[in-house]
Image (cartoon, rainbow, N blue to C red; front, side, top):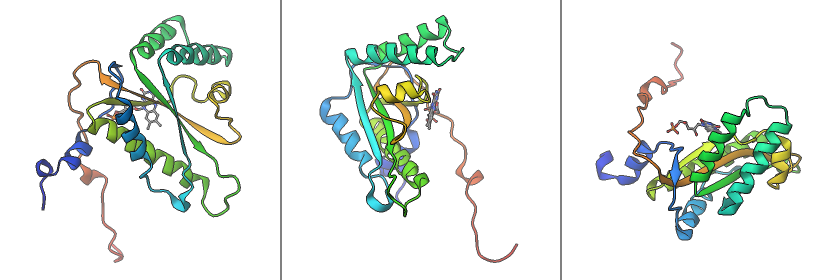
Length: 198
Ligand SMILES: Cc1cc2nc3c(=O)[nH]c(=O)nc-3n(C[C@H](O)[C@H](O)[C@H](O)COP(=O)(O)O)c2cc1C
């Protein structure tokens, strides 16, 4: 059997970890394209391609911060204190690229349950996170920034009647060294069904 060390893609899957604090440089355009193309390889029942991505970068990040913070405040969420707002703005200002993620709901499809469309979209995001890691970038999936606030969903062009907005991916160069993540032993999560009653 090939060892992890001999097969770098498996090593990459084992070592990916989320990185929240990011800085420039952003992935180059062709690297970002590689990440999105990796998303297209997600398993997808019925080939519905339910995933939708919106790139937010440059001055649009400041506009996103203004829009989302104001909308969260208007929604009555008391957690958006001045301290929280400051830290959110500082964090966002460092991130060179955000990708807003949504699942397009296939209303007229009676064969593929919406749950499966959601799973396919989640799998597409996983491919982006792994591709970012393989290309040497850090990435972080966040459902902060008003993900569940309708006004934010609409402002991003994801009308909740047709889309399920799933948050943002922050992508960039890791701002600091991050130690390897401690992962559980897979044996705690894997069992075998033999068909023979215990
Ligand atoms: C759908 C989704 C939304 C998430 N939203 C947040 C979030 O808003 N804030 C946060 O701190 N972590 C959030 N996380 C968790 C981080 O993205 C990350 O997975 C976690 O910090 C563990 O790091 P790891 O991916 O290296 O195991 C979210 C994860 C998922 C799958």
